[in-house]
Image 1 (spheres, rainbow, N blue to C red):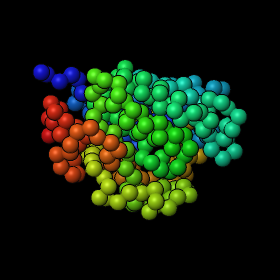
Image 2: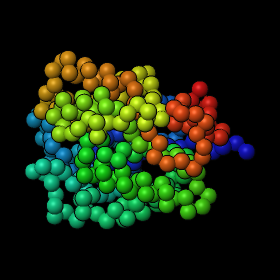
Image 3: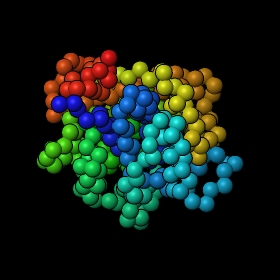
Image 4: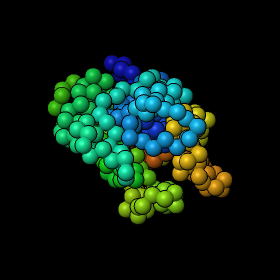
Length: 276
């Protein structure tokens, strides 16, 4: 029997999460004929506008348009939105917004993702690591909901979802985030090399990934952390972000042929050629 079209479901919290963490990998597999579905939990309504030249009246609507431009740059279809609200951070935290992810019942979020799994029927799902990259509450909630949906989706019947991957931030990359002003311990937020199951060489997708980041102009403007970096710091960040992307195994319903794996589909029957 010829296998169906291979499918990846990537689940993240805000517009731009995908570009920073997995943009190169999603573009790589899309070019190989993989169906890639990006689910974004919110429209980033509580983000910080980092380009003072922009006049934005509806930030959620604006960032939705930015994400659609970014996915187009990556060669992906328009994203799917889960229609939650951005919880914000610091002085922008939305404590009283009942649709802010921080206030949503995590089981309800799991059910939404589980329903999407049933519709999309992915072979692979990707989401945040257990620390949510740098600890944003929305990242943590989506990690929990997506991981739970992977496990509960095994009871749907007739599904194809075989593997769950987490974005894997290495210790050196976590040190880079700390230098960018994120208050985190690299030895907690970063993972050891032995934890990384897949290291994707995405250098061939560097231009696509860079264009996707530029598409998120409200978040990557001159007042952003990236915008305020020195030329040397920005060069180091680009070298790391545009070269490789790492993943750890969050769950599997099939054996692993080796460790580390050659790619996300390594060992999945009928799809091994995707990682040749």
